[in-house]
Length: 358
Length: 251
Image 1 (cartoon, rainbow over the protein chains, first blue to last red):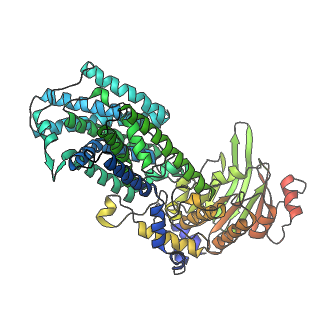
Image 2: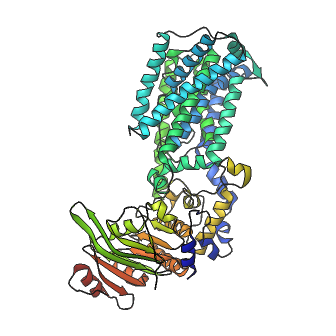
Image 3: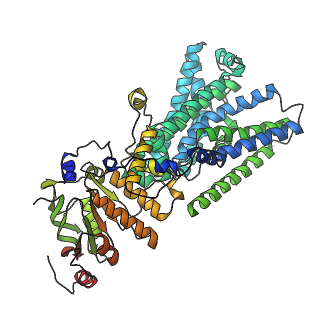
């Protein structure tokens, strides 16, 4: 009756599975199929793989159609810098969407963060790297505040994420406009303008900031318990709750991350354009969600990678740039991105249905 | 003799409805105890109380002869009591191994562990050991659970519970949604779990299945223990009789 003894001594720590003590030496489970071929199969059937092909095709097409303008180092740099701001927000969006959440507010939170940052820097009146750092901090705190607000409304007031963040999409922009009387702030410190023109290894600092965010985001989502819990909450919230995962806290933190990164993107946008571009970000959420979904993150949660998002974000970015280079009316970009989003979600549906039928 | 888990005179009311009216229940290590009864007999309520989901209004629960109060399922788990829910509570997008560790992820030793980095290799290895030792046919421990058959999913949920159970696993209708062959497999698995020394409490509607796999059968009727059979002296007529009240047999 050893199990009775075990039950007696069973304490609060449940780290070691006991059933493994009865296990026979194992080599059959791994041996029934080649793990390598499985990995290859899985990789080639993944969204990031398909999407990188789509991306290469897009690049090839634009290069052929506009050989003089599109395939140049200067233009590549342009695309990368353009994509950097979106990329930072897309990392946050990936986290939120893997947990089956949604954040429509990021474009407005970006503006709000930028406005807060620029006002803080103006208020300080100094013009050095310290000023910029304070601006950055304030900008991110502004984003964090909206992220926490979203998280609170969604987890405590139980308003669906779509509506909650649609609400803060309007509210955050409104507050930003109240702060500035509706005008863009244009007097940014000279230091910030220097940063926007400076580069490291030939690439803008905005790119390096985005790269750091991407790497940290990918590591956290892929290798940590926090990341794993994000997948579990998105895959089956009830299972997460029953397993003792604090779902509310997890969601709260995810929206906080999304908000903070949108705040950071606000500072990046301010750096790039030297103005708060209040009117220029209504489409950001659409573009970012399109990129994230194209990268293989499921609208229904539980699936998604940062690597996929990186590839996914470059599709609207390359498309936008390609259209500009080819002198196509800019309105077509919106048409294209909207339709691509619908197509990507349709494919997500098909894949899900095929898998669940298996 | 002390039992692994024993309930005495459990009472539970919902408003004016008496769901449990002094129910007794006993289970010993290494046994499969089937809990049967008509709809509304109080099976689910009894299991919910014994697994910590709800609190009884009266009566007591003894674990190895000592009185215990389970404040929540998480609390009951700390006493080595696991539950396989009817909906399985699996994350469909995650693999079987990942599902086995939901909420109990192992971290890497040292600094990386402090950063919250998972020990994926160890979790995969140990989950594989459990799955194999229980003879389940789940081959691909990385494939999402959604891609598995119903029986395999059930196996994953059972293996997970067994992996963490130190004494007792509750299973709520584990074969309800399965075909004949898959049911066969799951019943074999339940038997192996019990043979490994863990007690299994099985809720089921399926009489032939119950008589086949259970060591003892407790029949609930109108919130009371109506009968208690051992596997040998149970037959369909007696079970149905005890369930419906046409036979009064308090063992």
